[in-house]
Image (cartoon, rainbow over all chains, first blue to last red; front, side):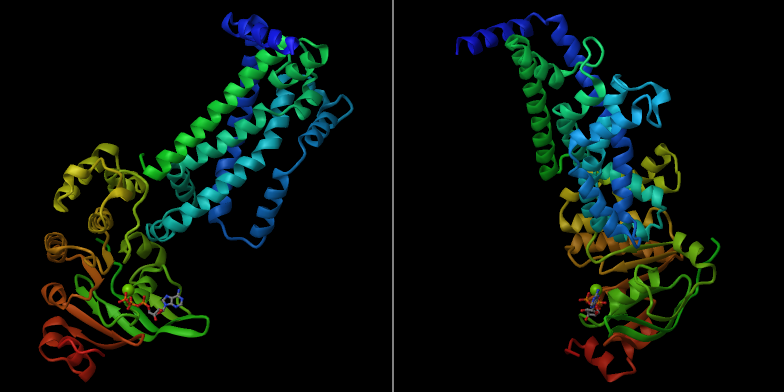
Length: 234
Length: 236
Ligand SMILES: Nc1ncnc2c1ncn2[C@@H]1O[C@H](COP(=O)(O)OP(=O)(O)OP(=O)(O)O)[C@@H](O)[C@H]1O
Ligand SMILES: [Mg+2]
């Protein structure tokens, strides 16, 4: 019990003094995850929209595959990315293993299906609403996708936030491909795992608080977006 | 204006799951006419207009314009029975069709101001369109259809939810468009409005064109007993 209490006190001290290690790890976490969310959104949002407006023979199958990919165990994703990037793997020459880039790749693979799936759902509803209007105005596919993404932006930001929430808390895959190297690939989750193992609860708890804070922030943002959605604010 | 008209339908049918919604239909829409489609609920007015506009594929028969279908699609607009408001401000709803054509922002905004004035909604330009009242939405839908100056406009009961003032706003706009020789096809259940606006009338019954002709002749002396009964307010 004392152990925990001391840990919390030390953690708060680290937080209020903007401890160097803690800041560095937090910033790296944000850098990796925000990059992954940006790349994933860039791919997944148009793809989700395209899937919603396009009628093709394998559409149902494509949606089923997307939903299945959403359930991929992150650890297995980590393993596969490791094999691909390792020296003897097909992308070994790129020398990316144990770098932030490798972690970004793993996170992109984990969250792209999630973001695409949520985006597809939202865009499909909007498309049902706009269908006759956009057909009647003789729009091109590109114009339709751009219009739906813009007018559905609140739901799509929510999709991106869901991706962020999943990525920032992920530990298995980035541990494998990043290696949790100090001052290089150590992020919030892997550091917490390590420090807890070492018994250094102060840093582990401090990092834990930061992680909880970020998750809450994402939840609040999602909630606030949902409210403006209902109130049709913008 | 390179004309896309006349539009002709020959032996056209629209069927759904074996049920004939409209057909057989043979008719033509001439340039610069304001054609009013009347008929009881379920007669097929909406289906006919959607088919002519291309929102509803013909099951059989032919739809032809004086130009290619692609050019014709570019030059027409459609206002549905239930207006669709984009999740944007009123202004951005009005300028959307102009943006699709690459009209500059300032020119588009000037036009939006002008059209908002005509539908008496200038004060609401920055309001979110989905929050407008039903009648206001209908006026916006009409303005948004006319703003890109299509050669041919379809309006499906554009005044269905409107009060007297708003109906007059729309009729004034439509009369101005008629005077400018724009081709309009419109359905309505308001016979007074049909008399005020129409140059031609199509009377639909049971999915077919039951009677058609010049508006003055039709209203003075309908040729079929069903049309005569419909005009006197009997149920047909
Ligand atoms: N998608 C559809 N599937 C099956 N039946 C349909 C469909 N659309 C329309 N119908 C039927 O076709 C008939 C004609 O409908 P339509 O909407 O064209 O009538 P309308 O003349 O516009 O009626 P109203 O005056 O009530 O607007 C109706 O009996 C309707 O039930
Ligand atoms: Mg109708």
